[in-house]
Image 1 (cartoon, rainbow, N blue to C red):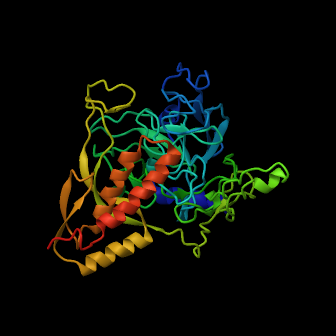
Image 2 (tube, one colour):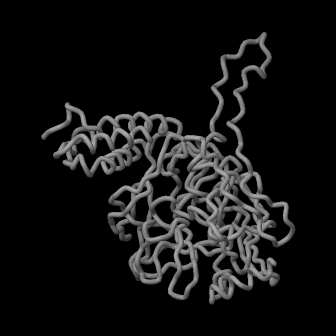
Image 3 (cartoon, rainbow, N blue to C red):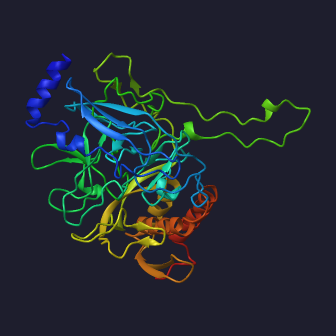
Length: 438
């Protein structure tokens, strides 16, 4: 039955879905002679077709491009980069699911051609915050986790520097075997999330389905269109439903009390993290059979946030003009290099907001008419907005301003500062007598 399903799907597709020999050959270190500053080791990564309906992607997890030295005081990341042994097994011919799978694991969801694992856009933190608002990443947009796995959460120009108006090449491959391409499509246009389906992909002119990375969230795949092999060889523990709908497994207990010599030490250990949800995938099947995966979110749990599409002006991913040498990355410690080009575009932006804030804004839009001013940057910038149409846009820009202001603080302090700043935004963007002008 499994073989029949693969055959029928291939007929429907009409084209080969497998990673081509050229695409497999792209999986190699950016610089094979690069010596990692953290480990003193060289990177190793490759991909091959096994000739039995499977393909293997291997990486030793050592970055093949420049990184920061970790632990890093600037970002507050306390983790180290260490040698890994990752073998990801995928289908040569991806098997498309009847329904997309949204419960992405809290581990790698794919591997970039540079050999660096790709994680989802959520760090393992309560409230399911965007990684952009949690920690500044290094020059190649990467950092290590608690397991010492160096990884990306979103687009890294060090894997493949985009050339302006030139179609992107393959950038990586997902757990389901579907290729991940860069942000510029075959027509030479840089893609935003609004240009793709809910999983972050689209069908090209040949009829082939591909994921694309984008500069706006969720950056990589938001869900998986294809099946995951039972022998994918990924650690099975991270396969459970969490962000963006459930954060209980990341909640930590209260801080220990001051220790007293006559009281057993165990009494002062904080409680364990919140409850782990039911595994989202059953890997009990043998060999090449697909894992049985389902979205088993606890719908009764309210995380307190909602995700809304809001209109926002953003800077697209920096690209290098044809014929110009932009180096390994357009990003520097002080900003974007002058040689690189950055397009500005108005897009529908996937925005995380508190439910109570949304309620206040909706009430304000219903009750208030006219134009009202708001201060977005310590009283130096005043902008006029329509209270009826611009409430959500106000919050989006104000929260972005919070993130910019607090970006240089250590991670733990930055989270607290962002929360305080967000509370100020609620007041700022709500209609009150003190700021209303008719």
